[in-house]
Length: 611
Ligand SMILES: Nc1nc2c(c(=O)[nH]1)N[C@H]1C(S)=C(S)[C@@H](COP(=O)(O)OP(=O)(O)OC[C@H]3O[C@@H](n4cnc5c(N)ncnc54)[C@H](O)[C@@H]3O)O[C@H]1N2
Ligand code: MOO
Ligand SMILES: [Mg+2]
Image 1 (cartoon, helix red, strand yellow):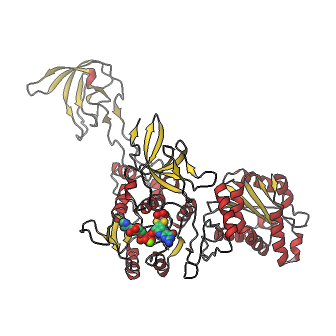
Image 2 (cartoon, rainbow, N blue to C red):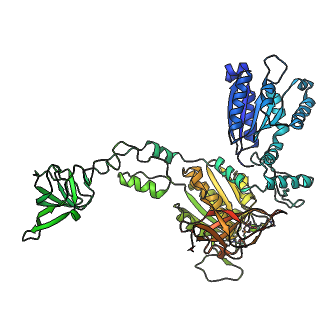
Image 3 (cartoon, rainbow, N blue to C red):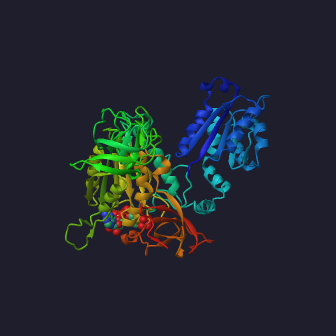
């Protein structure tokens, strides 16, 4: 499920006075966090006052992000119980069946449930549910609706593909066995068949998550470093830039109180010289270079283009010049601290680019080093041969290790160890244990699918890692796996080289950037729209297609880089973007030339041709 914001509103005179007495609101928050791991929750307390309740509900309804509001309390028969009465006028649509489902489930527990007047309905794009005030009732009501919510929201948002998938799943649920009980996966609507993954039921036990949902899990699980943000917020400049009044031009430094005309040249001041304290008359000047310190008694610079050389001495030094424009105080002088003043913040905003951070730090003479996540790369596969070795029967050259090392370097990170392992449980277990003593991230390729030599998932379980997801609804990259143990993170990229390439960009890179303290919007690759130049038959899975970009009169157009099979590494040659193609539907089985799709930008030099 994509990230949802829930509103939890506790309505009770008592709890409003003393929020510490509220048990139902916090319980609801726990339940939401359990079933919707990537959700955000806003909470509030109100007394049983109709106007106040309506005002708060309206505020939340108007927010784009709040999709579900659950109120607890004020649903009974007492004179001050007005929650349903405050809710009803705000609803665009009643949801009486949902109200009934909650009532029926509650009535099975206690007949007193008949004394709740709570309603359910939709206001704008927000689902509102009135739950009673007791903690027990809140749990019962939530359990009743929890697994309906994702589908309800997809329907409300008119997310046709997701709705279709759920319908398909409902029709086939009798065979679909959900074996995973981890909270990240519970409550999830799985679009593809899952099974037990054993001899009797050979389907993967891992639900196939939508890419967005998998990404949300990554952002929720990975702890973001605060070092960078702290630095940006707290680091003030220990120096002035420039530290002296500096000339902006190559020219002559003089007093602005003097006039244009002939001046004697007292000497030359170059960048790196000390500021001259020499006395200076109005008819005198110093020759000066850009960036050099102004003499103490000068206050302006006249650029060399506005002067005439009148005389040199026998040593070829300039002795007389004519100044052809009127000097003005401050002309072509950079005052002390003009670019950055001592004590001022060095970073006006967060910019995690290492180019930016390190150059700014260098400019103030700071030796501070920003810690980057420590990353290791593992390639698994008994078939792998080092590119240095001679070809051997049955073996293939390992391209993933080099590709992943190069990608880390390209994006400003570093691989501190790279290992190539055969498909051996012992080798993988021992290497992972050792590596995680040293590194924060392991980016691994291979061994995550359904083969009897695909040992990664069992090894992670053995090492007490929590497997957050083990399949993603994407092509290439379906068996993409993410696991963590405390603040150690494992990315299991599928072994096919292009699958590893795509999943690195879509998942591993944003994760590393997030851990390094980047802002969330900057973590993923930039996305822009491209016009397709080919027809493409859509796959059942949403597909990340490698394509070259041509800029035609400002319009970005994309040509697919040949056969897109995930083993064909050649498809990354000339690939500027990954076009996001949707999964096929009966109404749209093909992407057509001329269609516009969003695409992730893979590289800085992402335009291959201007036409
Ligand atoms: N029964 C099923 N089989 C497969 C499924 C499935 O759902 N059911 N998924 C397929 C998909 S999709 C992918 S992608 C691959 C992923 O496989 P693994 O992650 O388990 O990777 P391996 O099996 O180890 O290798 C796959 C392929 O890639 C080559 N490879 C591996 N490492 C490297 C490397 N470092 N350099 C170059 N090439 C590498 C390897 O030789 C294999 O050809 O699983 C499908 N199977
Ligand atoms: O998803 Mo696999 O990555 O199709 O080849
Ligand atoms: Mg495999």
